[in-house]
Each structure stands twice: as structure tokens, then as C-alpha cells.
Length: 426
Image 1 (cartoon, helix red, strand yellow):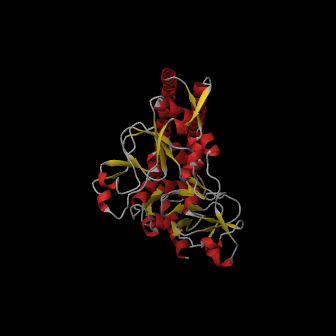
Image 2 (tube, rainbow, N blue to C red; image 1 turned 45 degrees about the horizontal axis):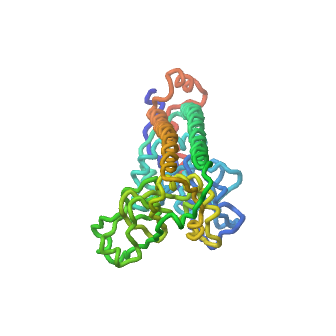
Image 3 (cartoon, rainbow, N blue to C red; image 1 turned 90 degrees about the horizontal axis):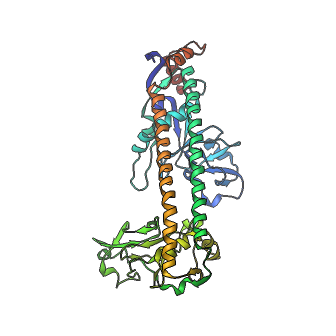
């Protein structure tokens, strides 16, 4: 590609990043105009279905979002995410939602802008500041270096990216379908494993139950240089817990409501937003402590811990629905209902055999799942590679560029940039 086909510039030469308005949550209604917040911006899209709404008001007209507008989350956990607003009808732009508005639609294609910004995603994220709650400034985004291509080349780049991404998306959809099928197979394995057992016992009769608590944050001696794993709901992500994010000291235990939990105890998350989707259960693989949102049971000698774990995991959806607390604003599991939940009872020898059969089958699932995750990561990397090639000027073949230059709309990129700057001044 020749120098006349592209020119270096800044993002600010091509567009303006417009900030949103601080709408008051007290003014939200059940219907009206959607208010797009940073949490509504997903990769490649904007979630309107779950957006808050507000009455239409001319005072907000300078913060209208129209179909095709490109939005960016400028703070919080989703900082740096882009999405295109593709819904019919207008919406309003909440604070810290940036609307990336081209200076002139006539000389620069919106989808070109979108892909260009996505190619700069890492640079944009690196420019964020603020630690745990990162923020992006409009100025930093607008000063990022990029390239502007001649208009017919912009169109050709967009068309080729969309073709390649369409093929990539099809492969990703197949991988995600395979993931869903694995989940169904896992549940079928667990259901089959326990279907021949005829006797049942309630969980409360299976061992010793304990809850937990949080040592005072005001007493640094309870936390500073702590060595004892202290489990909160965010630690219960895998089958086994060997360590945790936070630790407490031994002096914290007799001086708070937390307690020692024995190794091989089962841990249950009893209160957390995640209970809308799953019921987290884990096995303590070391002696530890838990907070007030966790219940534990140390099983007696008649039970194999993995046996009870796999049975409960196979029925976690039923437990969430049959043992949930009614009338609570925070999703919770009722402790008495959980303790009354029936577990199939059989000899330790049979329990051991059932666990071996389950883990033999699920180990195959784990290997397939790992391959799928690796493939999804490669697809993500390939997407970025396509974008990098596109804006390095290496995506189009020589014959494709020649066809672009033969187009009646073709003019050198430097001329195009001057026209855009002229429109910007207007």
C-alpha cells in the first residue's frame, strides 16, 4: 500500500468523544426512553433490554444516542468496552458512557471507526487510571495515534473484516454450543450415578455444621500478616479450596464469630448474587475459616466427601429453587431447608465406586472443555490479529487495493483528512 493511500493522524482528528449526563436514579420509570449506562455496554453490542428508562425530556436532547452510534464504557469494571447501539429509536447517554461521534460521516465510515477503535483497545485500556475503579479520559483517547485510509479502502477493509469475523463468529458459536452440550452431559452423568440408590438421609444428619463470621476490619492484628485462609463467596469457584485471597491471624478466631473449619469439610455459599445462576459448593483441602455467608459441614465417617459433593452438584439447580429464602432482596439459601435436603445413602464401598465412575467420565469432559477454552482464546487472539493487519495496511491484497484506487470516490488520504478537519472546524 502506497503512502498516498493512508496518512497518520490522531483519533481526535477523526472523531469527538462526547460524555453523557448524570441521570438521577430516582427519576427512572418502568417505561420511557432507555438510559444507557456503562454496564449496558457489551463487547460489540449494547444491551437495551435491561436498560433503565426515563421520561422523554427536551433538556436531555444533547445526550441522545441514535442507531449506529458507537459507545464506550469510560469507568468501572467494564472500562474500555465498545458497543454499537443497533436498536430502533433513540436512547439517552448516562454519565461515563462515551459516544464516539465522527466529525463527518461523509468521509469516514462508522464501522471503520468501530474496528479502528477495537484495534486500539489495549492502548485505550492501558491509558486508564484509578486502580480498582479505572477511568478513561476523552483527551487520552483522542490523542492516540492511528491511520486514516482513502474512502474506498476504508470500505474494502470493513467488508473484509466483516467477512472474516462472520466466519470466526460461526466457529465460536459452534464451540459455545459444544460447551452447552458438555454441561448437559455432565448433569446426565451425575443423575445416572445416583439413580439406583434407594435410601436417603437429610444433610443435617451427615455431620457437624458450622457457620462463620468476619473479624473486625478495624483491628489490624486480626488481618496483618495473617496465614489462615479465610473464605468468602468469591473464593468458592472450584471444587477444591487450597488457599484464599484474604487471610486472618490466629488471634482473630477467639475474638470474632469465625471458627476453625476442618479439612475435607463441604462449604456452601448461602448468600450472594451468584445464586441467581449457580449454587457454589467446594471442599476445604486445608484447615481454614469462613465468613458469615458460608455454611459448612464436616461429614462423619459414614460418608465419602466427594460422593456427597457430586450428588449436591448434580442437584444444585433444584437446591437453589427448593431451598431459597422467600421475600429477600439478596439471593439467599435457607439453612434449615438445605440441612433437610435428602442425600442418597449407601455403603462407603459403593460411594467410592460411584465417585470413581463419575470422575472417570468427567475427566474426559474436563479435557474437552480445556480444548474448547483454548480454541476460544485463539479465536479472540485471531480477531485482534485481523484488526492489527487491517490498520497496519496489510489486510488487503494488491489487486484489492488497485480496485479501490480505480473507484471514482478515490482520493489520497491526505486530501480526505483535510476535508475532515475542515468539517471539524465547522
